[in-house]
Length: 609
Image 1 (cartoon, rainbow, N blue to C red):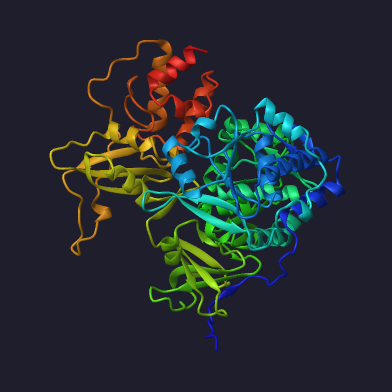
Image 2: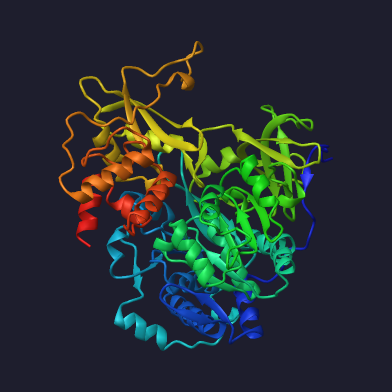
């Protein structure tokens, strides 16, 4: 007999659609062939045009022997081809593996070595980022272009595939940060993705169209394509809406993005609470603004009380809080802000069960803080080629029939009086920093691979409200010396930019608590101080950039040799820097700050036009 749990939260029980995403694309195309489906930086496609491009590329993949459970890596710039490739991989019945071209070469190599794709879809400019031995389909190769164009645009049918797609086939593999210093690939099946579609129809898409009074909306896609949140805007495409794939420079710059959303009259945007604050600062949600998106979905990090109050009070805005780990297919909870007076992750989506358990995996009473475990249709298959990690996080569910599993999220929550769950922090070393999920252990493992480092501890510090920094504390190996600049450069060779610490602090020893554990509160506050002996600015532009750096970072002085991020800058302060620079007539972009981090280099970039 299956034991019962009295404090489980259960989402609506709904039938999971028997069709798959390729079928939904065909239905949407049949219903609106001439309607705009995709607006990308390089092209605009109707549903008929997009569908034809997808079918031709899918047939090319099938012609190359690609089929069910074959993994296909997609390493492409943010163009229409990136969306076509994703859809073509699914249409061929294969498994989509997105790879961010902005990642360091070592990280891309580690991901591809783990994924073992049978094919990679890329371009000639990016092909050198592939791991050795991975066959490449170069979409800008003239012979490949001709071969794809020669393929039929007729819909791919079951008979065209070597075997039919089943709901339990893998739809995609998404790599997330790993505590061992190695990214891990979450494998999500078609059944879980279709459950998300069905749930969003009821809890997201339907309320959005009702709120705006239209059955076709313009939806902005601003997430990185290797981030699980990239699926939320994409799914609108299968419902017949118009998807806007925003280019990298625009999606990362609040001022440019607001301008784009207004000019294109975009109705729906999903982003992090931190970035939404910047959009709000630029007037996007102001009732007097010439155009305002009517739907805002927030995810990736917790929403603060002040922002919650501000957004829920806007009558013209349907604001939603989306919560969910990659291991449970993007979104496991949805809360409509206007329905709750205080921040909450809300209630489970369709066919999802949530347990709040103590450290002995016993149910917590309402109001008690415990760890969140998720079960149901959204639970992923596990970590690709990592049975050890899979067995640690994907556990047998004792409250469901044999064979059912639950995922241990590592998130601490408590059940409020209204039955919803309130986020209360993390139970492990995983954190969310400005919307990006990372394992502190992965950053520590990378630093400890450097010959000069014996020990490393990485923490997220917030020494001033809203100013979060990733800081590394290191102890030198015997006979060695830790040089912060060297370690930051070393970390940047294998970690994504958002995972590289803002500062490295050498210590003689890591502070320990009486029980021998790392005493995190005793770690010293980093001093983002200027290195001694810096030269004076030599040009008017250097003078201006140094002044802007100092103003934004709230430090007395900056030298031309100073690195913005080593002096305490973050992604958010970089956005403030862009705003300040534009008031001085410098039209900088966010990527310019990341590429030219030192004041001297940024000034040279500006003077060079």
